[in-house]
Image 1 (spheres, rainbow, N blue to C red):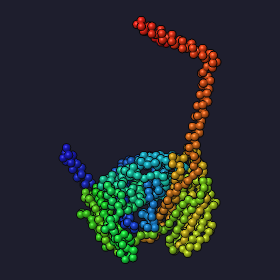
Image 2 (tube, rainbow, N blue to C red):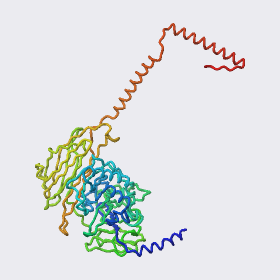
Image 3 (tube, rainbow, N blue to C red):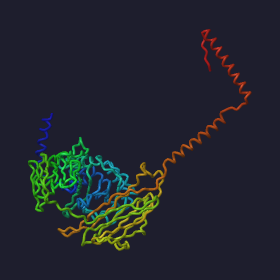
Image 4 (cartoon, rainbow, N blue to C red):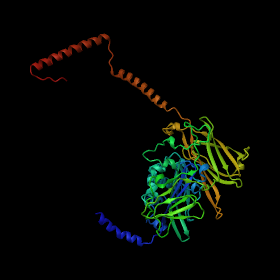
Length: 598
């Protein structure tokens, strides 16, 4: 049976190889070592489909499951993010993809929907969130009207849309969503090779969700490379920062063990050095690693459904200095870039690929780009009624001011007082000065909340001077919820979605401006929490009172009250009647008769 199956398959393979490939699917992997034993791995998968085939539901590389949802919800552009962890910009530099592929902690979704009015757009938005929730096994259906906003200047469409479309932008977040393997599995099913071949074969849930930071994104948009030629494009990315030491531990022994004494590298020049004390000596060598050690497996060749064999696409790229020693598997072709820090590899379709970097002296390092802006957002104050929000913006540039859009979404039970907005500027000399907030705020868009219907939306156009730190603060009030609106872990606090910052960056190569996105960390808001034991106490007390009242009333209605003399007479008659009945029954039994006692 197996031989007959392969004999039937051979003509199909030969026929498919004779058809010219259209290069509608591309995938790539970029690896970059980071300080503190970290490794950044960026996976990118891109599929294209013509608009005619997409409208006719003729899906080839484009996933059918997602395409039907987008058509049913009239979604013209979609951006979905799954993110966990925190990006350490002070140690790792600027964010990958300039933050455009990164979302808030949890789940973030924004889309442009074609609808005639806001009411129709909201109805299609609900259809979209519920469908995506089932597709990605996530709680996206909990993005209701209280978690949905309509940004004005924070997001712009990245696709080429027709002027006739009446597009409505809707944005929603779930900061408390836990991203796990249940979201990775449907993510991989959208790929042509389903994670069985290509760089997607490295994506293992045990490694991915053990990372210090990870982000999964899905982007759908129409692209028109030529005026008369338009395609719909879906781009999936996975960005992870792995700890090399933790990732190299075997799965059957994940607990870190202390280094044996004979393997400790000590600084013997210290006066207190002895057999009992050891001052660790700083290592000058770069740690060695390989794909099979970090990811637990090697790349299962190139995806045969993807890149054209004649296009010589560079699938795996590594950002290390050219003088660094790197070993690769047989059959792969290495191409070094002119920048001196990048090298890429062409993979074979049916041959495994592994990359090994041995431990060696690191004389030079890949320069890390400094972030254009640093932001920090925390909740201040104390008490159960009021609090405050503090946002710190740090401009590391010594020459250029930072112009950006600050977008904040607050739940309806957090009521901000915008009139209390204040600003404090601190220079590099450490001198603090309180100035009016209007000095930094150029434009303001504020949409107040409606209880149990929508949250607060605040967008600010800010400009931070060079070499300075600006701190914005405002007060807010906490609402008291109904006891049915509290979650089971009410004492943990309520999640507040991170803020989104859009910086107007500029590309030095062509002089064009491109957005750079930064997300702050999510917050926990403690609310006045009632004593949930009181309802149970009330129920127990009420049940006791009702039981006593019912028992007393029932006794009064059912029992017969007689005097003591009547009770004794009734008792004597009762005993006499019982004895007479037993005598009659015994007599009938002796006579062989059966008696029936009513």
